[in-house]
Length: 405
Ligand SMILES: Cc1cc2nc3c(=O)[nH]c(=O)nc-3n(C[C@H](O)[C@H](O)[C@H](O)COP(=O)(O)OP(=O)(O)OC[C@H]3O[C@@H](n4cnc5c(N)ncnc54)[C@H](O)[C@@H]3O)c2cc1C
Image (cartoon, rainbow, N blue to C red):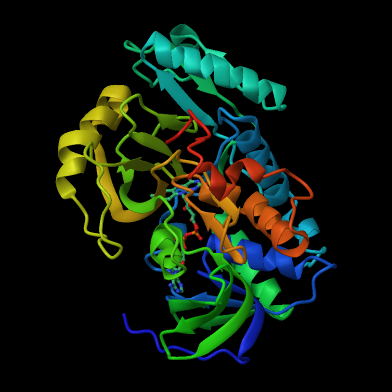
């Protein structure tokens, strides 16, 4: 699709955000919401339809079941933010009141090693105030009789603040309200950056339209293209596009209760979608990095891999009909699957907001808030996000998050 580029209104901004999907929009909104900040913000988005962004391909669910305390707390803030969206947006009565459809995420372990991971993660989650319950196969079968649990040794589920939420509504309102407060969004693409003589500051970004715009700080919110953007600043960030397939199907005989977002030990996952339909996700076992523009569907994966797994786990799903399918990209952090945020250690006005794989939508409120704090104060004021600093990569200090989907 051809996008006609627009030049920005000014030649100089305090903050330029590269990428205006959920992360860029969150950071822009939290900046616009901060009373200590009255600087100028430009959001450059190469495709304002967002058609190929991760944000448009999402499952739009949140969970409290992570294995690190910080990731649990990030999702707790997401739940608080979503349930109190209007309040967070200054009581604006145009903003809808949202809820979370709490069907929970059901993790299945089919071996003792992974069961131990679930047990250990539950302890972390309970300490942080989450309501995760471990379930034996018998308990699972009693509550969710439709599952085949013959190979399962343990299940883990949490029915509070865990399930579907309307990510699109939050995204729309972040953009709308921040624009009303003076944040400028333009359709254009950042194609180059220029550093000052010392090499430690980005002085300007060059846009596809040819405009050269000088900046105080630059935020990389370019999703799966994070490394391409970082390369313009001479930086390498270990994030690459990985393809993830989604299918929405209707069941001939729908389940008579909500289906939790079920994570089969194979990695295939499926959840309630309402009205007798279900949303399923999976990927190829090989899982290479793909081209930034490669969204071709692999139809064999469904037939040969995903559907047989589904029908084994939930025999009622033998008789189903696919309604829609698509391929999207995870911005996959190959180093440790976690977020990378905050300033670069040498190019100190270049900030990251990258590497969110399959959990960026729910992390977006805390990430936008933390990023705004770091940009304004040079430190985190609410949740300490410093474990996600870029330096952990050259220092080879990964954060191990075991609950990755
Ligand atoms: C199939 C699938 C299911 C998912 N399910 C969930 C889920 O249930 N829950 C959850 O929390 N998360 C989920 N996620 C993850 C979540 O969707 C992402 O982590 C999140 O949307 C990432 O947002 P982003 O803004 O970082 O990236 P993106 O949404 O990809 O946005 C990046 C933007 O940057 C723009 N851009 C790139 N380069 C430039 C440039 N040089 N100049 C200007 N603009 C540029 C792009 O056009 C794009 O709009 C899922 C993801 C996928 C793919």
